[in-house]
Length: 160
Length: 464
Image 1 (tube, rainbow over the protein chains, first blue to last red):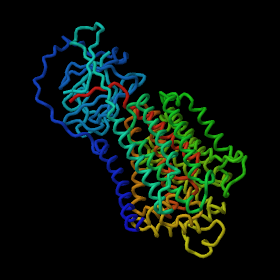
Image 2 (image 1 turned 135 degrees about the vertical axis):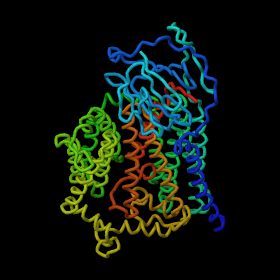
Image 3 (image 1 turned 90 degrees about the vertical axis):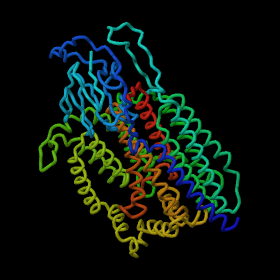
Image 4 (image 1 turned 120 degrees about the vertical axis):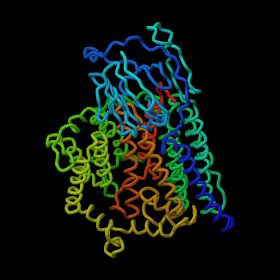
């Protein structure tokens, strides 16, 4: 085995090692730099009939813990999902429990935490903020039932 | 818009809001296919490393290791298949990265065996391969048997007890190379502290989930930081005392540093208070200063670190001879290394365990060493990522703790070898020769895989 061959093999081996590193980095780039922003298609908002004359949230209802999340505005209006047992993360990242991909949502935007008193909404330093009943959430806030939460172009409510 | 989703229309009668649509999104096996691809690459890299070692050291390929290598590859692929079945959403990068690191370690240990002329079971590389297969089997067992990581939370006190027992056991056995961290039973020797770090990470995570509120909410504000109350300092002081106990009775600087650092970082992650880091670092610096004055072996390490080339340190017993040989090796390697099998890493004492990084640095050079560091960086960042995306606090803390303990161990060892910090005896995860370390680190891989699967494996909704 000539010295030159060994020399070339040595450099090739180092190159292959780095190629492996870069393949891994390339494969997880969406985790490092966030999901790519996708434009919302201008959908004619589907004519979902909204609940007629929704009962206003009364303090008594707060004692009941919400079990589902209903989307009341945005691309998926009318969709409802069951809330998980204790934790729901919301954001553009595909690891989130509720993935919202629009121009205004941060990779890890907000999360809902189940406490003994009900669900608590926490904004995770998102760029465009999280609105609870029209006002921006700055600290973890208790979410009453049937109160609109807005993230980007999506609005949802927690319901029983 | 939601192409891969399978909409399941709820059949149960509900108030006529609209048609109630529930979406369940299961990530396809894309992750596992990616893992398979990376694993095949990893096995190829490992085979190439062994082949290069043989070409460099003995001049011709020697197929005696081929069956063992194929056996290990089959085991790694078995783990991959197990993941496909029981954890199909697990992280696809951890297994290939650990495989490459483990394989590079085996290649370098084999190279040192060739230099020393060992044969058969005397070869550390054969034993390392045997340990790797044991570690892989155990990791597969963890993945298959542990379906829900929250079971660990229920057994947190058992893990605390196990951690303490594993820490204390070596005191009853004979010290090896000054440090009292080994258990020797006949021909087998084992470092229980390596397994102990997993048990303690589980316990710390469980403890901090329950105790977090009192540790993070209450306190007194000094300048811009909120300091905890004196009575909440208890846990930190207990762990500090335990670390100092390891330092004094087991004469093992690295393990003490590892446990204390692990607890401190998990405390910081759980509470989000920088004052804990400040308090912990204060305690640590105070303890380290006292130890360097009182304990002769700690003082010797620090002298060797500050003045490795001084004659008294270089020639002294337990001095800087090993450190300096490692540095000479690294400098001999230069940028691209001497080539596998072509350097003289065997001159350094313990070149196959504590100093494996110096050996690899000599033969793969700065370029290769940085590739290895990049692999560690990716491994640890995946662990943090799993913790960050986690849904329950216990899982989040555990993932961060396990990933950090690997990162800290790499820093302590490589920092010691490259003279960034005083040298302490810890094993380099996955690379260094040593069964207990391999078993512990592969278990960490299995736990992180399980955690990452439960992060991803839940019904998800995508709005776009």
